[in-house]
Length: 493
Image (cartoon, rainbow, N blue to C red; front, top):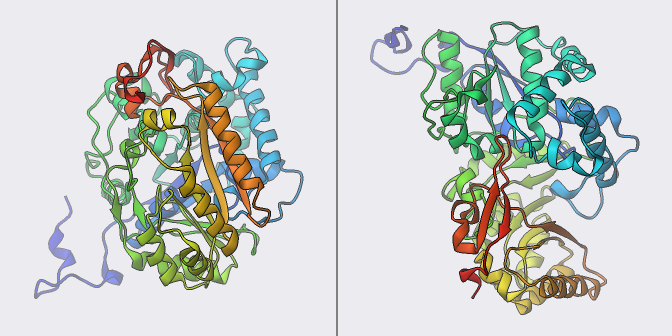
């Protein structure tokens, strides 16, 4: 037990930071393949790195996802009119995504038909034994050797954290965990990230998830990460928020004042995106298909002062700032714009609102906003009733007019295939949206069209009968549910 009195002066005041003699830990945060993300550092590890370093610990980030892509991409990417997360070499990433599926399928315990590769190796419609078996073979093969080489360039840490954002990273994460234990015996490995949060209830009830994984963390975790590093350094019990498989989970503690820390030595100046957040949780939070309320928790604002160092760093590197907030409401967008004042280009995500008129959009453009992503989802009234997100075609038209005049590029998230919706009506309204974009030649826009998937922790997944859904199968490592329509949704009426 460490005597806390050694950190106080004789009058009881805290010692200056430079005289803090408490033991410190070295840690490594690993991002496993495969994410279609390439333009800059990941937000989660950057925030943990910032928190750990502020407490005096050593935190390095090994982005295996970026290294995997960087070694295999065959053409240079030139930044386009769309800025932020969608400014990426999509064709190249799609090719590598297919190649990753083929690699996983080649290590699958049984033969995987080509038309089932994505569902098995990415969605993980598979048994626990199949997923773990594939990962073990990957760890023993060329992928494992590739990981060993990269770990060999790092100094043995006291702790390793893995960032697992979606199911497509699970096989790689399991394989990487095996390699870490082989290269650095005795070094504990902890998993966190959005997918761990989605599976947290399952993990807390089943020890099978804990094979080789020493702990799991749910939600944003800057304070918990520091407490964990303190515990590792002082050889004291870990914080209760770091739980083992088969034991009760609790949400981690965050720190909304944390400034993310980036290592930009390997990034090319002028083609870089830096992630940051002004808030967490969705300010709307009512969509029946969405997992944000469960993954991110209730909406809350973060420290605006923490944005300034990121803006300054982006300006120094000619980088774009990408706000990773689920939804920046109009007031927050105005606040962010007034702070940035055009020093850097930036992107953000929001939803339609009557305040996005020509004057507002021109002002935001002058303050540096270059891309605004909107969660439109659907204009079909029946579908809007199902997902609990009404938005009018007229409001979309006004918004697109304002964006076109101001020069702000737009990304429109649109969804079809909703349970209980009329497929013909869905297609009609998707065509309407496409026409709205096409009839504005000065508008810079892209439509991100997605097919509905039933997420386990969404309102639909938690209460499927209310939406006329019958769940037919669940898989241990997947956050998606297999389902069929049992009756028309009462909520769509």
